[in-house]
Length: 259
Ligand code: NAP
Image 1: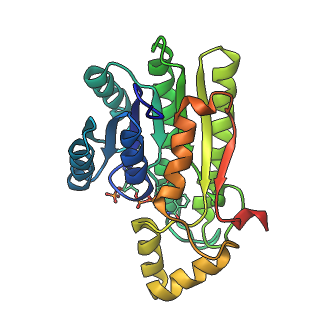
Image 2: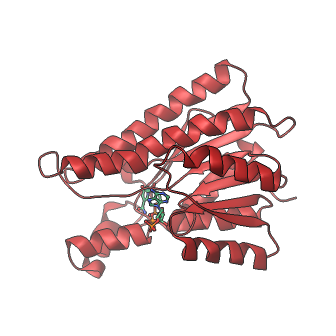
Image 3: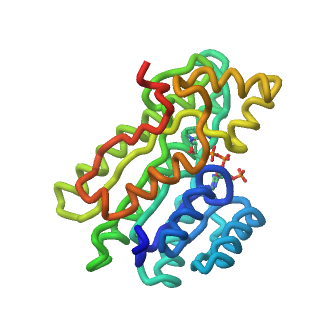
């Protein structure tokens, strides 16, 4: 029995990196997928891969910072698959900068993608999920970071946005639980995971292979993570196996924050 069969999942930033891995794994485990991203070509490729493996999926081009895009994305999901059970708020960006060096424009852009969009996705998904009778409840999974728990002097805006995701998730979880909505809301906190985001980040500050060795050494387990390490955590939170889990922080970091 597949772990999320009969569920419909929307994954933002689903064209690349962690989002792509989540979309592919959820589909492999039986979910019908809506892949949302800015990047049409990469998003369509993920949909093609899901279909080639026998799954069902559609692509929606969406800028998650645009409030008007959310009712449209959710309506398209319900129109195509009849319901929305799982939302993975994954799209995110990282712009380096300290509390002094970061520009207000970078700060606002980071907040818009990493925090405003998580709020918007949650705000519009809850009413849509509340209407899904017999689904076993909804699950909203917000991708935060270790950087939402511990700080980095050169990631001021990113830290603030991911810390915001962490506590916003708990507020939304309490709202759903106390109103008997049968919707769980949890955050996921990956350590460094090898994705285009991390590669681009290392490129912007110097040599990539040297940078990767440096990042490896930050994790007690000895290396950075892989996208599937996060996808398996997301799969657990999406499935009914986690039916008693809400308002929690799933840390997937090779021991980074245990130190
Ligand atoms: P990634 O490789 O850069 O992929 C992110 C995807 O989100 C890209 O396809 C990107 O599209 C899309 N995106 C960016 N802005 C968007 C917007 N406004 N609307 C819709 N889609 C948008 O990133 P990743 O490393 O997989 O990270 C995914 C999530 O995990 C992020 O929230 C990140 O903060 C978090 N995270 C990552 C790590 C890590 O080490 N990789 C660690 C902890 C947490 P374009 O490429 O076209 O912009």
